Image 1 (tube, helix red, strand yellow):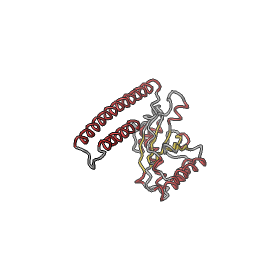
Image 2 (spheres, helix red, strand yellow; image 1 turned 180 degrees about the vertical axis):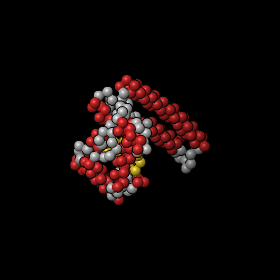
Image 3 (tube, helix red, strand yellow; image 1 turned 180 degrees about the horizontal axis):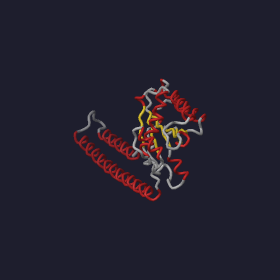
Image 4 (cartoon, one colour; image 1 turned 60 degrees about the horizontal axis):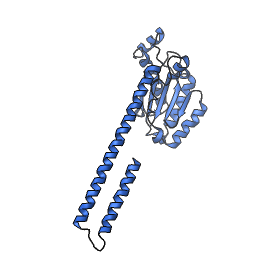
Length: 245
């Protein structure tokens, strides 16, 4: 698209140069020269519009091919295309990003921070006991310190989206099903992921983050980042993610 814009700019410059050349010795361009110049500009605009339309069709075709390929990959492997990064860290103040990076080094075994995506990823097995929505002590400490960073006035406009995820194994433990029913959640992966997201959000709010800044969502097994056919893959899929924007 930059090439199209550059060529159009050159063409317009040439047209006006011709107009000026044709008007040497005259204070004002003639009606004939103006009509000719306008027609030339109109022709160039039509050419570039056609070129832009062609490039747009090519872009859409490539995009569709990628989406079809990603869908086919998901059907065959159980692993979907890399999810959109969610809210970008572009709007997060640098001081807040630096604070989270420092916290990530202190709690390297609890969560990982992707600066570009604006995402903190907590491994569910480190954050929760099996089938539980109660946050473990070490993760609880990390979340309270994160809350201190996000409660800083510099982060007052930062939006915090907490997403819970699970593997694809259906919930079978009677204790977990009873726990979810008592919590008012559906006794399935979506209910468990929703409860865990709310638990994390609750700690952030207790630590000083305004509730209006926080949203939660339980995604269940909808967004795997690894295959669910192996123990290691399932462990990666069980996670809570916090996106900042």
